[in-house]
Length: 146
Length: 411
Image (tube, rainbow over the protein chains, first blue to last red):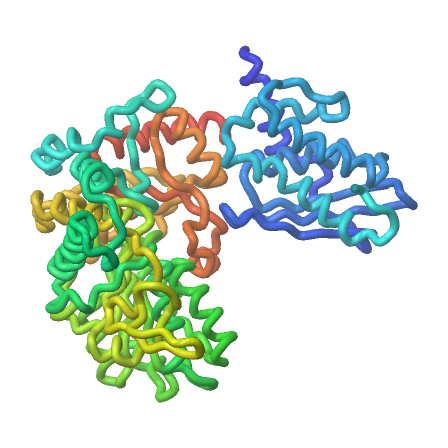
């Protein structure tokens, strides 16, 4: 098995059996985002306890990459602070832009996506869930994340 | 049988078709998005820049006169190609989108007021929806949608019901860029005119595939893009009937569209220059002219036949797979080479990416028709769309490569 095949299988597994799928009742924060390219939709709901993300759910109407990204993100951000989660998303974004495949440790679980980064048209699919997270942070009045 | 003569003759004219993609010969099946360019078009643009480049309608020197001559002869060629009697009815724009915006702005300002209605169809491209939504905000008009039938067509009987007194324009596409259906322009125009309603025809998908006869059809406006007829990007055409041109205020203000400018006011040049402010797509005009000449060389009848054969070939295969859902008419009559479908339980983006691995270029997404996709009940579709250089074997390759998508996503 090549490295890319292993990565593909990881993504497909998440796409087929997405983690934390659904919608939280009375979420602390929520956001719905669209991919204008293909019309895909993603809804993210977060339950917060103070700064900490206690739980999250996503509903995705989208491709396998978009599904997998939402699933992996959900696993990564639970029990992290919203600020940490946002920073992870931004580091992911930076990694997608870089020529090399070095990634910060926080972004390691997202490495399977980096194998696809030459497909520029799919970057938005990879980032849609993280965009929803940014959108949630924008609505959050407490801290600033810049 | 497929029209091998056309294919074998014309494939060599397109330099890009020699390319390999991911180790496979390029199978370019995204002609509804844009078409590839024959060498004659590329050469015409290069020749302009190398030998005649200057601005038009300005200078008195030799180059300027040559450029103006080339530019205006392009206008004549377009008029001739779409069956317009007078090349003064041809306005060069940047593309279909700008052509429609020109109508919604220049014609709309003078002819639309609060309470008026415009009829659009559910199968319109965003370029024939969004400008009207903006106009609706500015003028207080209402947009009414002519529904698409379950077969993916328009029901003419319904149009009669929609054509109430407050309707001021009917804007519709001649060929759907998703469903592939051909709408009967002449009949629709006749019905609209019998209610005193002018029509705008979006022919972006039609011009490369069938003959256009604006004068015979008596349509009021017709818009298309150069890059979808084997010509360059950055140029489009708006045909407007003389009576309509007279009802239109200027679109953009600037050089070239004026008669006389004073400090506080100006007077306007006559159409079509009145609607061509600023430096027009000068080098693109010889490119577009070369493209139209290229199509004429093979003859639109032969091109139409070839397109039909490819479409039939694709539809026959598609219906053999129970896991493929077709969007658009399944019968070949009044249908052209745009075939959209979905592979059950696989997102169209995923399908398109797997096909790309086999060198097959086609489009996945909503194809700028979200209103139509809402009607179809799916967010996105896979679309193959044919050009004159496509071979039935490329369609076969597409259907074979779908097995890889099945293997990856459905095993």
